[in-house]
Picture 1 (cartoon, rainbow, N blue to C red):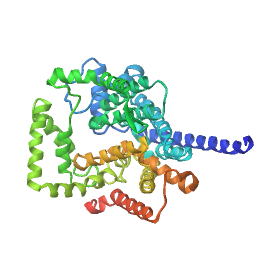
Picture 2 (picture 1 turned 45 degrees about the vertical axis):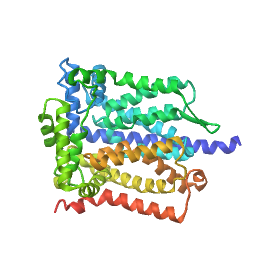
Picture 3 (picture 1 turned 180 degrees about the vertical axis):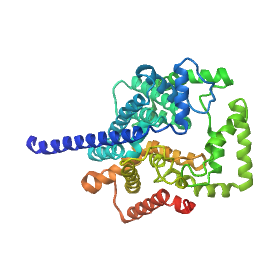
Picture 4 (picture 1 turned 60 degrees about the horizontal axis):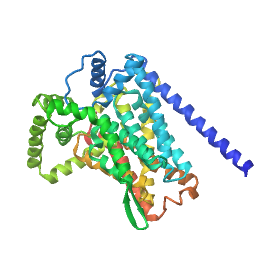
Length: 456
């Protein structure tokens, strides 16, 4: 048995080192095009995060608008205070965080499927240039994802010291809320982790749940208190009505074409002095839009645009590469010998992920397992939000690890069908569902420019 196990163990080690080498090469390539032939400028909200972090570091904090959560600003400020005001320092920290995200995904997916499927899920996430590139930018996606996956790992993959784990998980979820507001309506779902069934009776671990709530409150209390002092309400950030207003005005099916975001944001900020007043004004605007177009018209228009933007094969990385401006390419990265192959690889990895996860979702057998149930609710929650809110392709990133999990399970099943028996079921009907879902996702990824008629 020992001799038989050695080749398999050696193969796993070789596979791991191959993944690490590819990961290092991809990061080196992305860093190269970031700094050569010219330094890539900050894009969109990155500029504001960096500006506010520098002001905070200089002891001259800028007035709070309560539109962006402060987590990323504090995160950048902390790194700058230790390593100096260098974007490279943030990039290196986030590269490590993204690798931790992949490791956490592997750990979590092992609760649902075989180690092979979990490793493949981690590799699909970690070897995609479109996902690795987020570690090289100043958006809060990577720290947010690390906090979310870390909390899930604490709650679902460990058994020792339950109250301490619950407190730390709550702390991480609180930090995730400080990085991105999207968890604001979903965090109560984590309380279900403290509900268990034994002898046909449900029990609730009240002390662990209280520890979780204490950790969450500890993380968010400074921001909530600041919001209360300045606005009269315990507010961290709220841009939901602004995003809904812009989302209802979205017409193009991919990013950076007829983009209404920045002008609309300026108008939103200048519309009133307080968040409550701004929200009241924009709630009236949203109601007027719905009254004018009708609920059916609004839903139909949103279905015709938002998911094209979310699943677009022109990822945020591709959007910033050189290319035709009429197709929404910003040209933020300078042209080099690496930009074209990296762009094609990013689009290919994105396309492959959509196909694999479509079949993984179609064949999935048991949605009652805790992490599988969380995946279903989380993905459904994101899709429901983005039907209305202003969508950019980068919001796909926060769903990507979970989709990599389903893709990894399907890929593992194709490599060795015996590994898939516990979690996947293969029937003609499910093959058909998978094919339809894959075709739908591919259409959303690639047909937007054709339907919009860009670059004609």
